Length: 245
Image (cartoon, rainbow, N blue to C red; front, top):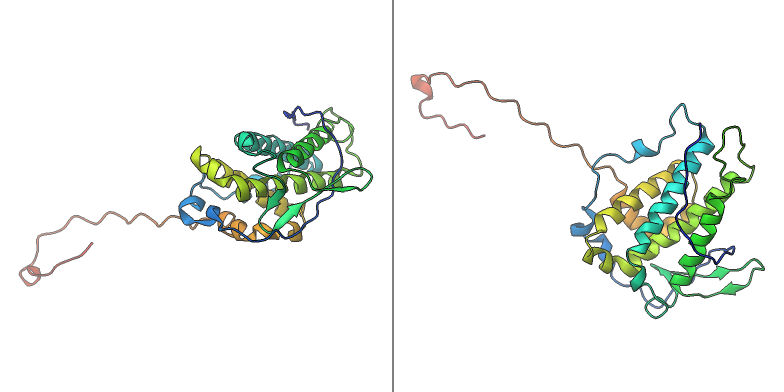
């Protein structure tokens, strides 16, 4: 069974990267952890049900379909604040206590601006998910042996983008009333990569505080009390008895 998978990012710059981290001077207050924001979602059911591999679907097909979907959704989410993510406002690709550097195909390390980094990431992701030799869509076409490692690379880069959105652009996201979409997308993505071990926990640990809040299933709603039976005529001994409901 083949899923139809489409890429939507149309950038020309293409390269390979390796993530690396360095602590910036000081960590700011994490507005995105405030309860008034974390409680806002666009769905209220257990996301684990969305990511579990269906019995009738091949694992690689499931990974390909979901990875492509996350690429498109995260690209779309970033586009909502892209005008605020400039070389002046985001002179480095930061997230929490980490600065991500770009490594070219020769391994040269470059500290680039956040929009440059995201540009590189999305361009690389589109190149991979639209390559018929890597993400085949035709019946009978096999996935390459390197498929899982490439999916892990894509997911790692997409995590960097999500982390930057929270760290550097959450205020703009709130201003546009899109925090519910971002929270739901982030939680869905984290549950997915955890289910299939696609991103090293050492990579995502910088956002563990948010993941703990957003990825913990909400407690089931309290049961509705059964309607009480019609009251019978009070007996003389119960005239002064008060029942609280």
